[in-house]
Image (cartoon, rainbow, N blue to C red):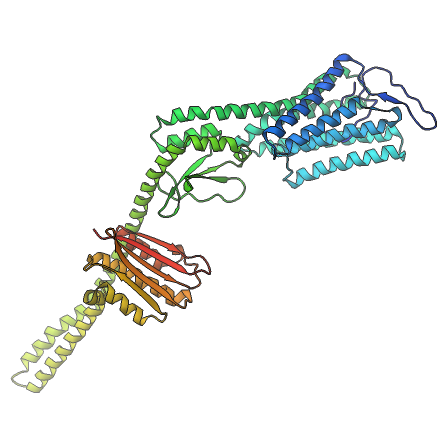
Length: 561
C-alpha cells in the first residue's frame, strides 16, 4: 500500500504502493475513476486505523480544549489521509493524489511544530510550516499543469519531503533541548512519537527512491504515525490523573506545618520543581516569601505568575513555568485545594514581613540617630564647647583687672555676656533639630497651623484630637505633616492641599493630600523613606498613594496606647 511521510511535502504513488496492479485508461483525455484501495486487507485496516486515530483524537481534543487548535489540526489530518488513501480519483490524476498526500503531511508538520497550543509562535517554525504548505501547492500545480514529466514532479516531491522532514526533526530536537522539565513533561509523549515516525520516514525514503523493496516496513511507519494522536490522548488522560491527585494533596496538607513543605507539595502536584509562592502582605502591599522578603514579579517569557484570590482579596502568587498555562484546570484545582493552607501561611508570611520591615526600619533609624548624635557631638565640640571655655577665661581676666583697670574689666564682662547669649542661641538652634520647639509650645494643632501659615500652597486643616496626645505620637505626626508639606511645596505643583488628623479607636490617623502631579515614590526619595522608617519605628504604618497625574495621598496610622 501507499506509505506517506510523517513530515513532508508530497508523495509519489509508484514508490509507495505495495505490489498490486494499478488500472489505467483514457478516452479522449477523460479517465475512469479507480479507487485507491491498498492491496492487502491488513494494510487497509492499518491505513483506516491511522485516519480513525487522528479524527477521534481531534474530536476529543475539540471537546476537552475547544480553544486549542490541536484538535482541528488532527481532524484535518485524518480527513486528508482518508481522501488520499481511499477516495476514488481518476487514475490519470495521480499527481492530485500526490498533492493530497503532501497536504496531510504538511498539516502534520504544522501540528508537531505548533504542539501543544496549535499556534506558531516562533519565526523559524512559521518559516518551516509555511514552506511545507507552499511546496505542496507548488508541486500540485506543477504536476496537474503538465509543465513537467510526472517522474520529475514526484522525484522533486520526494526530495522535498525528505528535506522538510529533516527540518522538522531538527526543530523538534532543538525545542526539546531548550525546554524546561515541566514543558518536557507535556511535550514528551507526542514529540517522541512524532520524532520516531519522522526519523523512520527520513531514513527509509531514500531507500524507497533507490528502488529497494521495503513494503514490510509500511505497517511499522503507519503505526508510528498513529502513535502521535494516541500519545496526545494519553497526555489528556494523564492530566485527568493529575487532577485526581489533587484530592491527595488535601490529605497531605493536613500534616504540613512548614511553608517550605507547602511549596514542595504544590510543586510536586504541578510537576514544576521551580515553583515559588509569594504571600500577599498588606504592608508593604506586595507579595513576600516565607521569610518576609519581597517576591518580585517575573520579567521575560521564561517565568509567569498566577495570582490566587480568596473572596475577592489577594491571597498568594504562584511564580511558575509557562508550561502550566497549558493546563489551567490543574492549577485552578490545586489552588482551590490548597486555599486554606495558603491562607494560613499568608498570615505567617505577613507577620514575618512586618517583623522584617520593622527590623529594617529600626536599623535605619538607629543608623540615622547615630549619625545625628555624631553631628551634635561635633557641633557641640567645635562650637558651643569652645565658646563656653572662653567665658570663664574672660571673667578671670576681668577679675584680675577689676581694681587696676575697671573700664577694661567692665568691657570684658560685657564680652562674656555677649558670648553667653550667643551660646544660648546656638544651643537653641541645635535643640530644634532634636525636638521642634513649636510643638512643645503649641501642641500638634498649633504646630500644624504654623506649617500651614508658612506654606505657599493653601492648606485646609481638620482636627479631631483629644488633649493631650503622647509626646512621641505628636512628634511623629508633626514630622509626617512637615515632610508631606515640604514635598508638596517642592515637587507636587499643587493648587491646594488638605491635612486631617483624627483620633479613633486608640490610633491617630494623619492624612495629607494634594491635587498635584502625583508620582511620588518612597524608593526614590530619602525624605519619604526616612519618614516611613520613623512611622514604622513608632509602631505605625505609612501608606502612600500617588498615581501619576492624580495627586498624592500620604496616610499615617500611629498607635496612641
